[in-house]
Length: 396
Ligand SMILES: Cc1ncc(COP(=O)(O)O)c(C=O)c1O
Image (tube, rainbow, N blue to C red; front, side, top):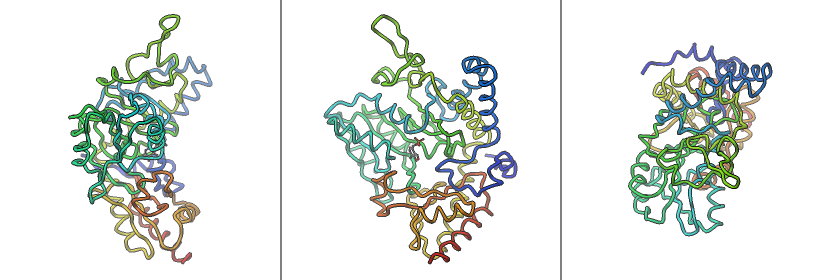
């Protein structure tokens, strides 16, 4: 595992000159390579026409699949390009044949989009149960094992909680679910791009992720992995067009094989090209090296935060990641983030509506989230903590 050349990656990241960006769990700064690839594609569309650009830049568009396959350790044709992790999740969820009386077991870390889908399913008579957690806050794999009877059709898990960085044992869950008839839907939105994520190790049937967060891709991009071997058991996609299906007789159509069945023809093509470039960039750096660097910056941040008067770090779990969360007894989270933003330091302040089951268990309404990526520096962490200390002192 090579270490990352920080000066080089910062030189590739124009935003570093303007802000201390500690909101990578929200939406990270892209590299100029990603940005230029998008602009080039848009320029090509404007110069020769949209359909013509699609044909001429086909290798750049196809690179999204090759790069995603390498990233997740799957076949390129098992990955679909979508607008974000929520669309990916909904497409996977709606593909599972959940009938009244069927059960879905999910973790308490589920993000709002998933929780809304599960509430809709409940209204249709599907039984949705939340898997208990262990004392560390992680999903209890033994409890899950004892809940997995023949009525369970789906197990849903969020690998990393956006609210407190909790890392769930995704592969242990996969090993248990693989012994049952249930399908395993993993929301890896906060993991992909932050650390190695391997669908074969995890044994998930679906995986959802977004482009703009740790992957450093464009906004409005995401990916859905669907294991080849389960496609025959799935319900046909709800949204279909000429890319996802073939009109093969007067009154029938047939979804195409492969990942295009979960895509529409009209899409963010420049974003697709850009996301492919962003994935290549991360692969070149090495996801193990990225994870190592992110964790070390985050740990340094936590240690310093513990010394700031009025701050309580709210991260949980035996194994911490690049999501650092805290509350203060001086200001509400949104005001802390706003004050930092005025000083060109970007954080975010997620609240209960984003992931209510988690926030209720934490007993807080909102947290400040600072999420360093590998391109951040030790000095930026120091400045962030110093400025935060001043903001809280001035407000107190
Ligand atoms: C854990 C998790 N899942 C899903 C999502 C939804 O991602 P998107 O906004 O790309 O739909 C988010 C976004 O914050 C998230 O943190």
